[in-house]
Image (cartoon, rainbow, N blue to C red; front, side, top):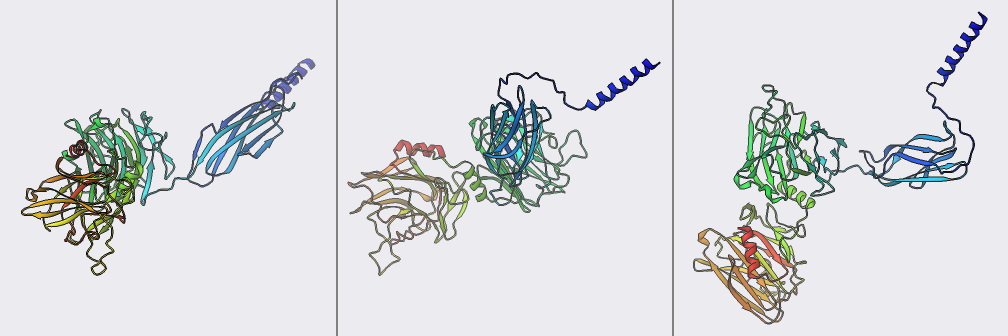
Length: 589
């Protein structure tokens, strides 16, 4: 009996000992021996290349490390950018250290994390990791409340919130801007909560590189569930839907907006159809105010119509690159195109604001050799090579033109532009389209003249022609004759050009070239007259280019403001050949 009691007591002791050891890392006894190897260090977080994005200026980061040694660790130190944050010298397991250190003062910018482990023999190992704390994104445009650049993630940068991923979208491996773009996939899209997006005014702008397969797709959808058809949603009395559809091999883009009681369609029509085979990045923008909706493609208005404003009832979800799950009845499912630089605003952007974003995202690249000036007049008078707005005098307007919109002249109105980048050569050319208004019967069109300081008695009469050039028109019976004058320092050369009939109401293409030996005027690609001279153009005093008026430097013969339309003005630092003139003409027909 006594033996049985002793055995039972031993069992109890063993159980208690086992319970006491439960939860403690096992430590294996190692016989003392030669310390052969240096410690091994592993940094579990941050990893090499980690980019930390948080909305605050200073971030909190949990540094996770592990160090092991074949015999015994002496110390483990954590350093950030060369400064020690923490050093450990006591360890639960003398051969292994698993540590986490919380650092709450991480500033924006690149950082180097170093972990140094040393054993009892003095052997040490250092591992470094390069990572970055990105500064909080600051909206760069007024009213910007959402920005998703798709640079390898689906994070919205203003709220620092990731979109919900449905299916398996990927990244394009290319981008209009930045390092990457969204690449659509079948049954795949992103969703995002609409809490901050439902405002009385709304704009969205982005870039697409189109994939016409499938032949229709949803692009941006902010719809409410359809209570009448939960399995086939297509409720359109609130929110908006921006989608595309096949149109005889091209793609037509449509915006639908719900007003609460009804809906409104904004359809650009055949004139705005996009050819997806071009493989080019194309910019799209939709704007919604309390009075109208507008659709823009590459900064040009393709549809504008009045309506009563958007209703947001039930619109709790934004879908990106699909109509699903709220707009699927007509097959507007996932879009396999590429998308980049998606921004949303709490205001209706103006055309000028949209064109500024386009220029910032994708600066204009001259289309033709020698092109140093391009003014397309798309609702403004910005020169795209320099991204500089001309000075507007008077009250010209912008109307439908030869390509997009055009400048429409008005009495006592014109544009002024500095000649800084235009007078660095002894050759120059200008090409443009005009829809000529013969009233008034004469006008200045392009003038780069010096100020006439030799006529103090009549300061308003300017007509110094020994430098620069002057391109203008004058009545010749019922026709209009286009003339040019170029100054070469000691004299001048006249080119009486050619004539057109303004009553035909047609757009006419003009080109004026100045070489070192002659000037040539082309009308609709045909040379009308060449004027020869022996000295090249002189630019003395020509600091100002005037567009659509002779004022203020060429006024003696009443070459004042032109009430015609002008479009697609380009200036070159060379004398264009007839073939180059016709290439431009045919590109813009």
